[in-house]
Length: 246
Image 1 (cartoon, helix red, strand yellow):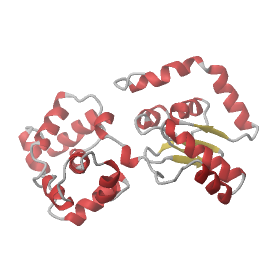
Image 2: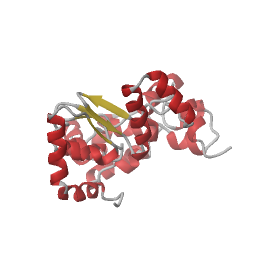
Image 3: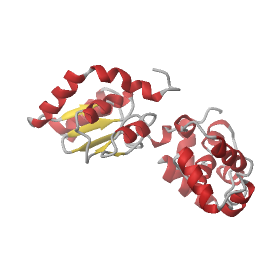
């Protein structure tokens, strides 16, 4: 499938009506079901995600949430079990599912032994460190593009909603409404994501304090708290894992 067309992942599933019906019947008989990555869409088509927490690859999580609004989609979770339905993140999370099933059917002790033999660990309890918001961005309308360009030129400046609205010649409320319509998020949420500074931590030797200043925060603690809330790791932990320079 093309990453530029995430919806293409669901197209082949329209030919799997028999399999979807089988999943629904099996679950109705009391059989637990599980899906890896975009397999969650099959469970959704079978009606098994309604009212349940679920996950899938972070890249496809927005599509899962839109297609199955009765599901509670957690794009950051690596594995979710809710009422006998297990869903996991990207294809590599098949290993996490296997370890989950070993622990569930045997014991935590057996699961740890299997993990040691397989050279596995459970460091990645979350997909959050891997999420690239640039790949999740919706196609922008002209208005949102103008907003993002204006904010991008002022990352290091304090956010001023009224100043932004005035620059775009609209009211405060119109600014919020139009940006939300085109992007699904507020201007401030976009700015906070843009300020997270993952790229600077990956590709430069700047200190965390210097990164904090570059992305517009006066207080390192505030930046670190925002970073951990968005990414699931501290800036230092993230840099140790993803840094591209030595």
